[in-house]
Amino acid sequence: MCFHTIQSKIAMQIEGRFNAEIRDKKDFDSHEHINGFDFPKTPVITNEKPVIIEHYNWGIILLWAKDDQINAMTLTAKIETIYDKPSFRDATNQRYLVIANGFYEW
Figure 1 (cartoon, rainbow, N blue to C red):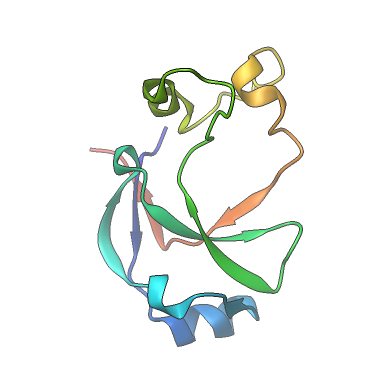
Figure 2: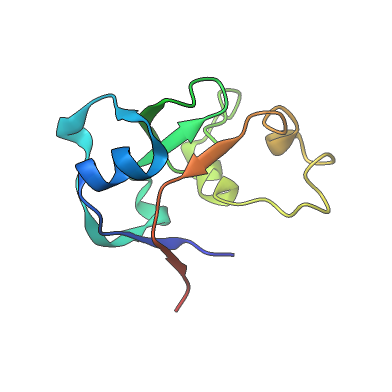
């Protein structure tokens, strides 16, 4: 799974490409390396608001988890087990477009 991304475009390019407005432009910044394990705020478009670009923390934040360390295990999900694991079951109908111009692993 890819835990590293690049988002090197400027705000105006992103808004034009996706025909959407960035909600908080102060949060938008280009980065040559974004590490998912740092749980950064990442620009996304949700299926609920397709004309707004928002910044969400990478990964699934489990409200029921007693220990925040479990969030490091929810950066990605395998399609084969997504409906079996309680950590992903509630998120199966929530879709996000992660805005990046590169996903990579070492």
